[in-house]
Length: 541
Image 1 (cartoon, rainbow, N blue to C red):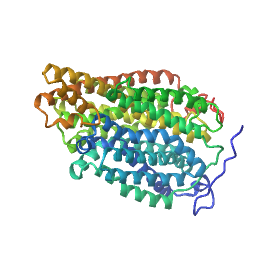
Image 2: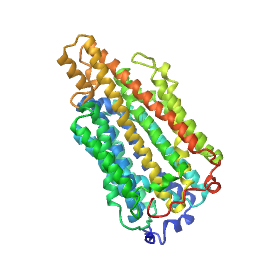
Image 3: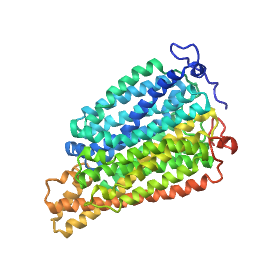
Image 4: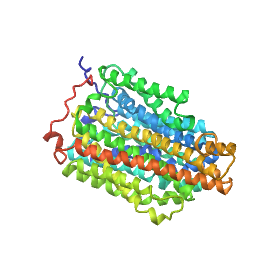
């Protein structure tokens, strides 16, 4: 069955479609449109990591524990990733501008809820609302850019700026979050989103064009199965170490995740307008780019999550000190992102992607050589590797995906690559957190037993360090020195194992990407020089 003929929604105040209006827009107006989209994108990406420096403060105030802190991070990323494809579909049906502005409004409301939260459940709920808003606004940014910037080179530059802003948002999170937490408390990392969100809504309503392609039936089964499968999987990964991998709740969540995700793939292969067109992944270049996005987020989101805890809870840095300590990675990612765009345009995405994944792996492995008594200058060298690796990955991923699909399907392709990246962050924090927590729990029990701490007290310390009832390693400041030392040592042991796990995934991914992108023609014309995947519109089988 063929797709329904697309219909266009003219912009308010415009006589035609966005695609018709774009050539008549002057460069200044296009620049204002791009700036509006990038500011909203920056805030959405910033919020992925800006909370990392506030985690110890949230821990002390709300008694979150490691598992609770993971959910503060995961609630946003999980909902964002799960609904990203839905946001793209809603924009196609009801207008990109409309859905973008609604998303920005929901995101701003979620930020207010987080700032006012007085309990861990309230904070997690607010983070989930933020994720809904981010998922609604994110897909519209790329789609609007494609329709406003009609010239290929002009569009490439705009996408490069878009990717650079995305990377800058991720990189600047710790540096911005630290000073805010020190000066105004952890709620300030959420209050900062409010004026930016309100300004974005006002400016966006005035300058953004409107368009939509109305399509057929909405993929409700795909939406339900995708959210259920991903949510159950992450729940099992986060709660497994705390509740036990064979506990009824964890086993039930794992089974639900397996069944739902299998059903999701089966449904998406058969519906007319799938949320996720699995046919995209028949093209090895698209598959490699999507996996690269997943892998770099898997390693880097996990690293950023644990790096903030390590610097503050183990090394004793203040939030501001931890934020400024991460500046080398921030500067490196901002310098590497535009270079990656130039390289991808000249020699293709393979070299910068493989190099970026390798540098990220080296950075995580390098961090594993340092413990709880290390000077900043000793591990300083790792941070530029971390930032440069991330910066070299973002733009080539977008270039690779966009160059291999038909222009009419670029919106879904962009959503697929972004979803892979977000899922990587969700699974990375959950999986590496599970590795760290399991090792922390077992190692801490060993150390407390060796120190002849009574068994009942030892169990309480382990529970306090790993689950939501206590407060994590940083909450043990009033405990006897022997317990604090044991907890710090156990945390570092768990961190080292998690870092090596992430590094292994990144090194293996570099090899996979190098193989799948073999013989790919260089430059931005790769799609015209090599046969792209010809995925028919509609069913993705």
